[in-house]
Amino acid sequence: MHANISQAFLPNSGNAYTTRFLKVRGQSEALAQRLSPEDQQVQSMPDVSPTKWHLAHTSWFFETFILRPNLPCYQVFDENFNFLFNSYYEAVGPRQLRTERGLITRPTLAEVLAYRAHIDAAMEEFFDLASGEQLETLCYLIELGLHHEQQHQELILMDIKHVLSCNPFGPSYHKKEPAAVHKTHYLQWFDVPGGVYRIGHADDNAFAFDNEGPAHEVLLGAFKIASRCVTNGEFLEFVEDGGYDRGEFWHADGWATVKSEGWEAPLYWQRDEKDNWIEFTFAGLRPIYHDAPVCHVSYYEASAYAAWAEKRLPTEAEWEAAARYFDVANLLGSVANQRASGYLQPIPAGGEEPITPQRMLGDVWEWTESAYAPYPGYKAAAGAVGEYNGKFMINQMVLRGASCCTPPEHARITYRNFFYPHQRWQFAGFRLAD
Image (tube, rainbow, N blue to C red):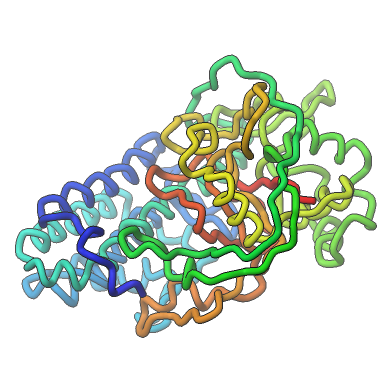
């Protein structure tokens, strides 16, 4: 579990850890400040968790894995919270069913915020008292907790968007329009030569989740990757060509889902009184931005579109190999429109002719053709923390990149996001390969 992370990875003092910790924690509360207590209680579907639950669960993580075992004077805030705010850690004990988190009307939001303050104060005390040796021993676990909280920040946005979309008046959460960029470049193709590529996380001086390693070599044939993601306007052509009524483009499970769920378009798309397509955004109901990447589509929809377009989705190895080959992490045009931009929605890639694939680390998480499975040599850590990723390596598909709601410092080309193929409330789109 990356226990051998070098000293270069560590903050140089407990004070530096405190600053970083409080910054991340403050970002979670800033997201929630736009919401009423009532907003933060709602669970609009089984996949959604209330904002209040996210705020408590991320605090529970530090209480359970850092404070209880490592701060001798720590006083537990409320023993009942271990049941209420454990997510899926079997080794920690029983928990509230995920589908019933919205029933946790008590504790109140005010009590949850008091719990957060209690955890923050205790963590500050821990950083003050911990020796350099103890911080070195626990560095990965502390960073895991911070990155776990950043994951939940994106989940807060995913979930509250769904909650607000279910309100009959389509209320807004945040309004920030992009600069006057209404076009995107024509789709182009970039060649990636065949050969042996090394993928996966291998930098002991930087954080990664355990599922991003071990680094290993893969043999790839030559392929082409699209210069940008598929846009709303392009996906609309698929819709208007009867894509959701033509079974020849769909996996069997996908076709069954289309029929059982009555899908006709991406999540949050609907027709207005003039029969024009509009979509629900954080700014409320708006006309579809035709040149922006399509978002909130499932793997099934991405794969069906690719079949309709006579292309395919890249594998995750191809996606990472292309990102490395074109060095997209170090190109300003490719690292754009994450949460720090403030848009909280995909925006057009721009009209200039690109020299590399664009926006591989922003706008939307990109579906790949790869099932979520362990890399060669992967071994989950011992104990409860080992349940973080490994137990989910079945029946899900990998997404790569980052989205318009991915927190700062949380995007990298080795990141392996994963969702079930039918899910689409996450900020997911796709680019094509050939």
